[in-house]
Image 1 (cartoon, rainbow, N blue to C red):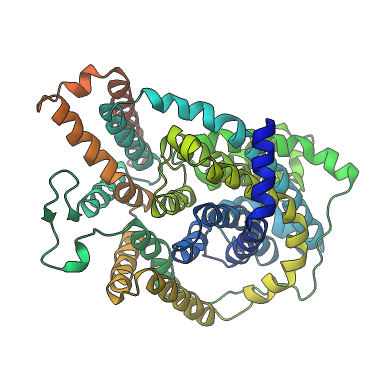
Image 2 (cartoon, rainbow, N blue to C red):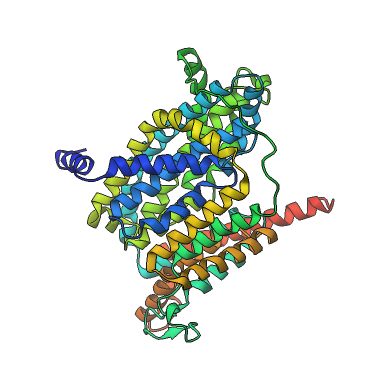
Length: 499
């Protein structure tokens, strides 16, 4: 970091409320992650409406810090009540709850916290060093290239984020259809508004995200019973000593490597990284027989992995505008709300936002140990509250946040409608991320497609003549074909037909 950048960073830390924003986001993330069923993306989506009128730098820091906090918070109920607070904490349940049954809940929580900090630091280092160089590749992109990039992003997400490629692509198409509502970006003509004035400006991605992630989750939880387990009344976090840190070094390294690759791959996500890290840590462990019976390594590997993903998933987001996870998609929504477009121009024209994101993430990561130890009693109290009370509080928070954006009851109606659609998607097994990505990337895909045709006088050969665009469209086709082959093989196995 040069002298100018160092002074710029110092001015941001001293002259702006980055540190308070990072701490508040971290606290909110830990609390949200500790509530079973309220994932990191939902926690961020609940906060998203309140960032609408904030300074862009502070808003992005708040959302990124929430992501970091939620990844740790999910391990608290996973260890204490055998219920992962987030999807990525599911692997932590295996050995975390076994340690709790052995009277080592404090040690398990300490290992989770320390491994999360290690993973966050590694992920942040990669985020700082890799993002800007990758973003420079986008300087050579034409409209046809950006069109191919958008199609590639949706194809990858659709093929990896759900059990069915058809359902993933269908969700993406629905998202693209929603993005066309409003004013035509080229001609300025209103379309699909049905003479409703509130739809002229289109349906904002924030409304779709909050409805799909938060409201649909509340509808799902309304039909389930309350928690069957109760956390211990008094548990103190015990950080690992020197000998334990030495033992955890290898599984943490495995978790960081796994989290790096999964974070860079759109659609990977923290849950996949956590289970892969758990399996590899068991494979390379000197005590594999302890896994599943309360192994500290079985906690360290998945927690390091999902916390690494929290940072590395932002690399494709900031470089190319392709989010690698649901949470990264929510952060992309935060960027778009404030008129910030990912890519090289973000680093050139809005360097304060990027630098603020780095600094805020560092503050949140370093503060994670102290805040995590201080907030544990409150998280335990929250975990043991009756679910209807928590659901009512969250719904009130959603409605208040959405209303503060435009003071519009119509927006609240759209969010509730999105929640019902999201509930139906959950019940039917349709993934959310392709739909959200379709809404977010829809304007870019349509705009670049039509601009390309304007440049070529309507000749579609422009998409084949552009080398970068052709390569990206080719990769999209490869992901679709591979996914179809895999699904066909799985279907034959399920029917007992030899491959």
